[in-house]
Picture 1 (cartoon, rainbow, N blue to C red):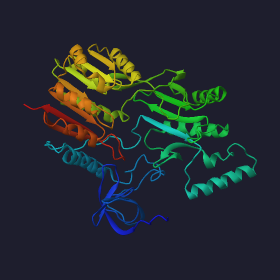
Picture 2: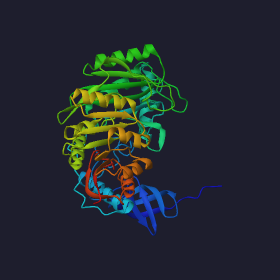
Picture 3: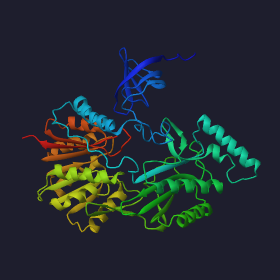
Picture 4: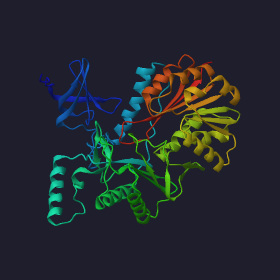
Length: 484
């Protein structure tokens, strides 16, 4: 049976932006989500999916460009999914991020809240990340122009008997980012504007070395190929970490590439590699082999030093992380005699950050290596009033744990995008700390959790922070105080 063709709509005006960063339009009673558009654009749209009350589509023609739009600066914009708002003027990006926080509190939490403070912009809007992870793939995404250029280059190289880049490397192999919605396809990145140029130099050098020496790139479906991932981490101290993830244990080729990187980039202070033969890219459970230098880099923040290992979580925009943690400390309003629980503590950044104004800080995290780093971070900074524990959050907040370590006066929580587990929310309600400071990268799950606490807590401060320019993501710090 032939699939029914969905409508093609003409002259549709984009009205708003939704929570996932897509433009929103209306046609009769139908809400339409459109990728790559900006509010104010007038477009012709081809629908690709249609339900009873909403539809999805893409632009077939831009009839009138919105005044909120600006020119994109990255050649990969529109293909790579990393900076979906690059075509939106930065002031308008801030406006819609602020609106996202307000909408979540109004529509999901449905509780009273004070005036939301103006979003704090990022000092840097390009090259602001301290970590990027690239993927190797033998399934390179090619536009029609790219395909024809690659064929021309391949034919020219073959006719000149130059075998350096034949084997269809220019056609099929890539190192870069997954195409949204096409996980087995990777766009080959020439220049990424998210991390400083060292990251681009490393990635491009690794790719060229692999092409020259006929290294195989990973095939996701067949689960074969040598080169799998590349992670580059930088820090404000000038230290540099490079992690190369291989899928096969080919010692000769691994040694050759790692020696080349060490010689070509002597500024690397931590050169590491991992053998990952699993079916997923996570390496938290795998051995990390130190090829050269240290197995960590250091980050400085407000006079404190933090050790960052290959498996450690650390905010990827370090300058804005300092803003975020300063806010958390301010909202905790510590006088020096409080017991503080820092949930989802990671490498103990917030815990160590607030320790000098606390009686005791208890940090809890479910990644064992992060807890090891958190303890080291306390030692390095001569902090003696912290304790860190490796547990799943929903399992640790029990009467025995609280009896041993003390009832918290303040809880600071910074969960992943999924928010807090229901058991954690219920336990906070049972403990009833005087203050909860909720740091979140997802206003929707933050609002959901706060709704479950609203019978006990009042929202007394809301501060959005832009950590990720050119994306729809926004951080928000909310202060909750126990009702009198």
